[in-house]
Image (cartoon, rainbow, N blue to C red):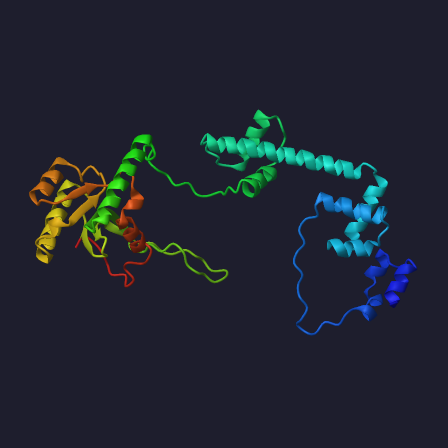
Length: 339
């Protein structure tokens, strides 16, 4: 039998003895240099573990250190639990009751939040959910309890709102987008050339929004606006070919008429019979479907198809604009102006 086991049998195995590290040096296992592993952080002690720890020490009379080692807690934690259970007979029953109350609160919060989500309520803060629980159920809860339920139990997250038009997801627009998607899938199966056309404007030259910075340095960057701003019209097909036009005028029927004329002439030079298998696709902006624009499309015999309402994900030009507006488009800082 080792010296440590003999001392344990004689009752020297106590908190004071464990804190005196000099008495354990002779029995400590030697660990080679750089071979000591960092143990993983232990999760919070569950109520069932507390009951088992107290039962092992007070009923089964196991050594405090052995119980602490088995449950991966310190001896002090075991001793505190044993002392509380010894002095207060109702300590564990009170703990069990508190857990039941906590579980009931979590269920009430989860049910209310699920109801708010189903009714499409705007949940802008944890405090609003807390107030709703206290008002409807008359149960006092904290913001921490509400946040824990929303994140851990319901898997919710707090993210930036994406503003949309009020009519974007109305029943009529959803049905129109579905019908357009079915027609579009049919066009893809015919291997036609689909030319998506869209517009954007450039009010600055540097669109970078993130950068690395050294410690204790500013992250401010001077921003130079373009005056007058530049309008960009892009035609992008499903084979990767693009046509770009830059103007210093707002997009309207006259500007779109010039673009239609130039693009039609460009396609005529590339391939005179392009109208047989090419289809222009653009959104339902007012100047896209104005009487002047429609007459011009009919004059040039352009096959045209309108996107479904608010179908931003179906327009490849949006990806083109997103990529274009992610860098500095004027890295040499060439002066810009009306001239």
